[in-house]
Length: 237
Ligand code: PXP
Image 1 (cartoon, rainbow, N blue to C red):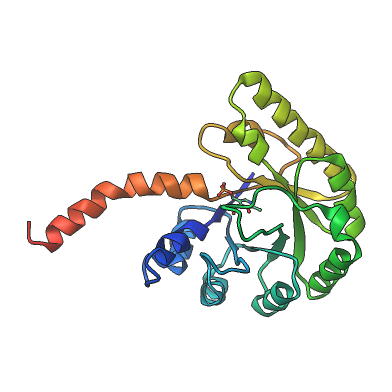
Image 2 (tube, rainbow, N blue to C red):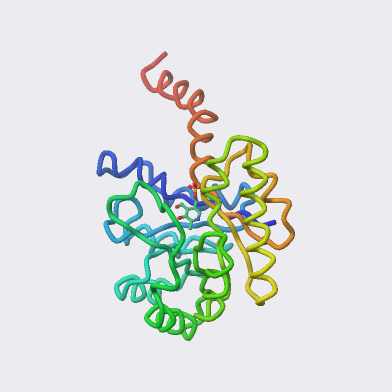
């Protein structure tokens, strides 16, 4: 199982002050040295966290695998062709949402989406589509020409009871099995954390997990002690 680390939240913290730190670009080497298999970032249309400059520098620095999440718009396709990430993940985007709330509805995207996927693939990019674990969406992903599906684990990660968790996991498992039958490769992500990841990580059809929030949330607390000590030293204590 490969791990892609989403570093958007580092940029979110920087944008809180519209300043220079923390710079998500600095995370690239740290994440790779820690053993992750790749980095993920989402260049949103409203540029609320990752900026165009971040993407350019991250692309230069990543030596493992860079997965660019983006909306399927003309602007983003142009940026992706220019930046040349290793993979593009097409996601739905709504300005008012706090995070990506659901998977793409591939049925409504239709032929325009197929054309964008074709353009990206013709330039050598691997294309993934972020979809809910739904068999119709998996079928549509195949028809539109995607190579990967990323299964949305948001619903699974919201469940609390054991039975509900298992049912939500079963939907992901069935979608992953169907995708593999269609010859699609499968990744998964959204809302995965240290407690709920094991059940998803155990699914052999899924080859990669993309995780951001829980890793960076933990990093705040594993790093805060040292940060306080460094400031005490800076003020001469
Ligand atoms: N995969 C996709 C397509 C996403 O949009 C996100 C969130 O940016 C993630 C994975 C990671 O989700 P989380 O930050 O909840 O781990």
